[in-house]
Each structure stands twice: as C-alpha cells, then as structure tokens.
Length: 284
Ligand code: PAF
Image (tube, rainbow, N blue to C red; front, side):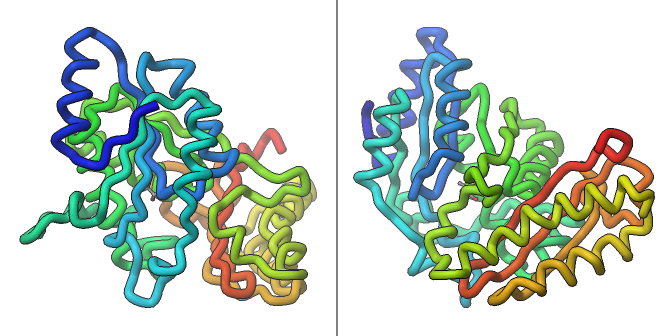
C-alpha cells in the first residue's frame, strides 16, 4: 500500500495505472475509518484493479461553528485497517495542497442542497461537491463508493455527475449498523455515557414508521409527529429535522402512498447524528 500526499505524484501514478488498462476505484473519506468505510473499500477491491482511498478532513464542508477542529483523526489506525482490507493507495493531502493560494472555485448545486442538512448546514454541500470534483479530477476513478448513511450527499453527488457529465460510476452502499441498530459514524465517538442508548432512538424510529404504515397511516405529518414524540422521549435528544422525502429529488412528500425516504438529523448530547431508511411502502 502506497501513501501519496502530493497531487502531482498521485496523478502521475494514476496515469501509469490507467495507461496499462487497469481500472481505478475511489473511496473518498475524512478518515477515522470504521467498518462502514471498510465495506466500501472491500466493494472497490472486488470490482477494480486498483483501490484508492482518500483521507482528507475537508475544511470547506464545515460551517464556522461546526466540529472541524475537533473532528476525530487517527491516521495510523486508518492505515492499518486499509492495509488489512487490501486498499492499494492512500491519498492523504494537507489542506494547503487541496486549496492552494488564491483558490476561489466552488461547485454548487441548488434545490437538492437546500433541504434536510442544507438548511442548518448551508455551506456543507458546496464544500462536498467541490472536494469530490477535485478528487475525481485527481484520481480519475472508474467507480466511486459512498455510504448511504449520508443519503443526501449520495443524491447530491449523483446529480452533480449527471449535470456535469462526469465519467464516474457512483456506487451507493448500504448503511452498516452496530448489532443494536446504531448506524456506524465517525461522530459516534462523541456519544458519552447514556447518550449511546438515546442514540438508538434514530434507528428505533424506523420500526415505529414500519408499524404505522402497517396500520394504514399514510399522512406523513402524523408519522413525523409520532417519530418526534418517540425521539424526544429519549434523554439528551434535540431534533434538527425529521423528514419524509422523494428518494431522488428529496422533495418533501405529504403522503406515504409511494416509496419515500425518512431522513433524520438529531443531536444526542453534542453529537449530531443522521440516519435514514428507504420505505418501499407496499413491502414493509
Ligand atoms: O462523506 C464524507 O466522508 C465526506 O463528505 C467526503 C465525501 C469524503 C467529502 O469530504
């Protein structure tokens, strides 16, 4: 496994790989890797000749009051996990390498980035779209792997690829959960004491929705109210949003009579957790 810090070096390496006809899979990450990331790495290793994992805590996707400085980092442990899971290349640039002097370009989508997380995190998706575009240009991957825990991010990236005619196949991978249902996230490390138990309110909500749909409740306002009551019955919780949206456009849906995604963002103590579930309404 090789580690590259400089854009020119990794570009030269990718050029060699591509000119020998080998395919490249990219797993973009911000490090502090866990089993969720590893599921993406393993999928890439299975389907590409070379797997590149980028580790970059991207400053432009954090708002001024968000956790950029505190974001957990452990490069050594990341390297050990990636070695074990057969990644070939790590791209680990400094912020100054990615955003050199005079940097002033932004990739910004409208609509799809202005709902859900985009409401409380107004700069987030432009930061994500810009850095992912840069990573695509640097690594030139055939396929790129993203987890569907960040459901909105996945739809934003798919939309951007379509709109900008980018030549990358995006592979969305299922959410990986602990045995008790908590979705894996680097931010779970912020959960202290009984906050860990309260965090189960997010995945628990989906069971509640399943039951409501089975009982024939279709009005999403009622569904969301019941989910809010359920979440707030857990100590240390504060709701950012509870939404029922169209799976691709992320436009809010009023009636659960067609497929929809329930998306949640909930503070549990200091941790802002997100989770979602795709409901195929006639098959719950
Ligand atoms: O999902 C993440 O870890 C980040 O948003 C990403 C896609 C690596 C961009 O910085």
